Image (tube, rainbow, N blue to C red; front, side):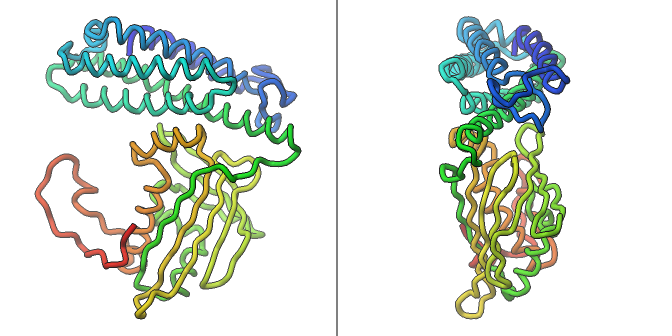
Length: 351
């Protein structure tokens, strides 16, 4: 959020541009742990070290002179903003120390991404203030966005490097036994055969999975998935069906070099009392940056447990009404008069 941010963003972008240069990094898959199939990449650990020192420097500035920083980015230097910048400074120093203290700082780099989101939210609110200098606030936001892109690229490269090193050391792909588990269920007033058939056609899934951009069938029980991720990024992976029992169960796992390794299943169980079908979803995923990054994502509504809950509610609406019904809360910002929903949720829409 300072002039140093602009300078670092410029150098960071140049460094990020070199990631895909033919000679931008080693191609032997060792040292920096990058896959040659992805192209030579600059050493992500070295980039992370630079981010660590940048965090410490920015944090010290925000702690030592929060009022001056506030004026530089075009916001009021009142006590509220001063205290906020002071707290952000403490956070930056903690992130920097965490990065410099670890050999493979995947988690603290992804923690920085969460901090970037907080900074962008703070600047967005400041831009809407009548007393702010909008040109300075906008410039600061652009600088933070540039650093966010670098943080995300570095986090993804570090995650891939760690996975590559694990594979080289063990001769097998890393097990997905230490990820985050998600379990959700909902009752849909439709027969199991109908719900199963709709889900089994994976190209239907983007109709109710909000973060999912597309699913392409590749044949032979395989498909290619593309989803939106935080900070305007996308993640992609190939998946294969490992068990398919018509009208009862679909289970899958990611394959090859997935951006987010995952495995899961969906079960279709006739609901008691002839009330339709209970849909049970179980998901295990390995978040880039570990459970800390998952916790940060949860604060911004990006955590898969929250996504699955919302996805199942939209699936219920699609199956029962033929479309997703949006409430006033989902289409209006800020305070607004309460309105009755277009279609009340039934008792089964829980969890």
